[in-house]
Length: 207
Image 1 (tube, one colour):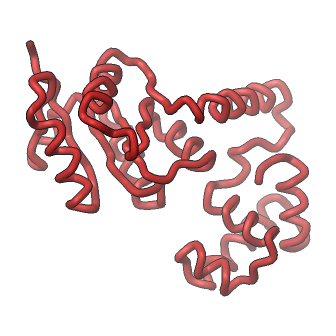
Image 2 (image 1 turned 60 degrees about the vertical axis):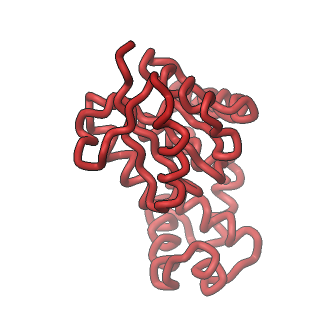
């Protein structure tokens, strides 16, 4: 049996060690060292949630024609689903379900070109595909891509009554960044103010 070379990416060394510990005994896979990541056929990205740093890593891995990418994640919502699809990720496993057999079966599926997604997210994915299809049929209709995940998050917080300082605290960005992001949305979509931007996003199902 040819072992599948697998690279494990995790900012948290505990997460990396946990996944590596589960995979090393399995004869189907070979966990490569960090200096051998270029020869990995499968790359597993292990994170708590999909943030900007994770997105940058996923986009970098997407540039490689030699590896397929799977995501092992703690928190995962619709915004994260959109990002992972955009980054070419075809397998998602919740960390709570990432036992040894599940990880190996996911790696095998990736090698075969198959997609893996938690059952509770299938409906979300189908809805996402439906929105994309509608945007193709009506290109003038605003779509999910009208807003980035960060912009949608901030507008959602505005709609819930949070001010700039509170949004900055909740999103871990500076108040200046929050102001700049919201100003950019209003300018790009030709909206008058934050309230107008929130109303626009809600009317079109963007938040």
